[in-house]
Image 1 (spheres, helix red, strand yellow):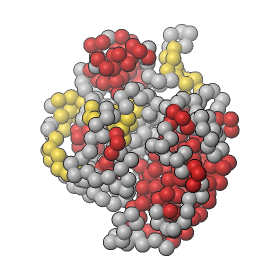
Image 2 (spheres, helix red, strand yellow; image 1 turned 90 degrees about the horizontal axis):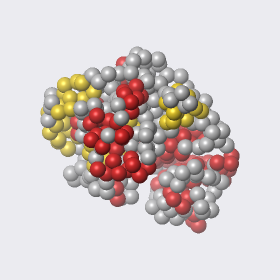
Image 3 (cartoon, helix red, strand yellow; image 1 turned 45 degrees about the horizontal axis):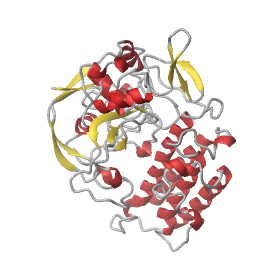
Image 4 (cartoon, one colour; image 1 turned 90 degrees about the vertical axis):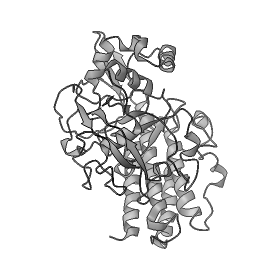
Amino acid sequence: MSTTDLLAERLHGVRERTLGLVDPLDDDWVTRTPDPIMSPPAWDLAHIAAYEELWLVTRLSEAAPMHPDLQATYDAFETPRAVRGEIRILDGRESREYMDAVRERALEVLARADLSDDGPPLTAGGFVWHIVAQHEAQHDETLLQTLQLMPTGAYSPCAGALPPGDGGAGAPDPIDVPGGTMVMGAAPGQGALDCEQPAHLRHVAPFRIDRAPVTIGRHLEFIADGGYHDPRFWSAEGWAWRQQHHVEAPLHWQQDGAGQWTRTWFGCTEPVDPAEILCHVSFFEAEAHARWAGARLPTEDEWEFAARFDPANADDAWAPWGHAPAEGRANLGQTAFRPSRVGAFPGGQSPSGCTHMLGDVWEWTSTEFHAYPGFRAFPYREYAEPFFGDGHRVLRGGSWATQEVAARTTFRNWDLPERRQVFAGLRLAWDA
């Protein structure tokens, strides 16, 4: 298959996922948002189209944008989330029509583009098409965060089956990692984003890390032991946040009449499963749980060292298990609609011995989001640079809501420490 066909297939696959996600959505909620920290789904759809039009049409040809009057509306910096539900936006039908029309024009540009490795920086090796596909996949995950916040009856997805796992709540199982010199970050190519680059040497001291992420069962122990009410486990900032917002458990959790914990998951209330990997906790909660467990959160360096197939090689495989496909090895792809039970994907183990390093839940690290040495913003500074050194914490590994095109061991996600709508959990670490 030619590079042109591969890129077209990648764009098509992500678009199928986007449309499949919003198809079950109640029409009444397409242009509304359940929370001001999120966007109306129709805004995300048209933003996906506007971004694709900007980078695959207007930047690569002389074509004018289809909606010049709405360019600021669909600029994420010009129109912050807090106002997207209050302004005029394209509705669901108009957004889909915009997406279809842009895609037709984008494929025409792709058909005549110079994709050679020594071509223009934007098109060399298909770089900008990889970026656009990842952008849409990332917004699909953001859409799922919004859909998870919808009221009962607004959204009812059809979830895929998961392997059974080992059925246990997963007691800590520390792995000794010897450390060493790592080539941290990504080599150029295949759409590695600017904040993942440049690849550079980093020394990692010996450390210990838990084989699997923390499960719901282990967090139930934290709750039962008074973890949400003991300031010893919380940072001063985290304790103030917990008290101000009266946080007693992960987001979407509540107790039933018998005092048992349940959760509301895409509109359905269900008992929590102790063997399932914990999700929807903030950095503050993750940090408190780790302290309660006599541990800490791993640094970003430690996480990547434990996850990489070959930490000493800048061109190693994108996945902890090497070059094989993710299917059967990780809970990725937005089809399961939940994290798996611990032990469900033994074939996804990294050489260090860690499991579930890609998929299921993003994992909070202790590292603040900063640029790598030699960082250069490309193709635009607004993707990552404005968030450096602004209190954001790095998350690693992707979640069940991440598509394979946007999942790799070098990928850096980030969010504010109080955010809980992210499909995020934690993994414990210790000093050697």
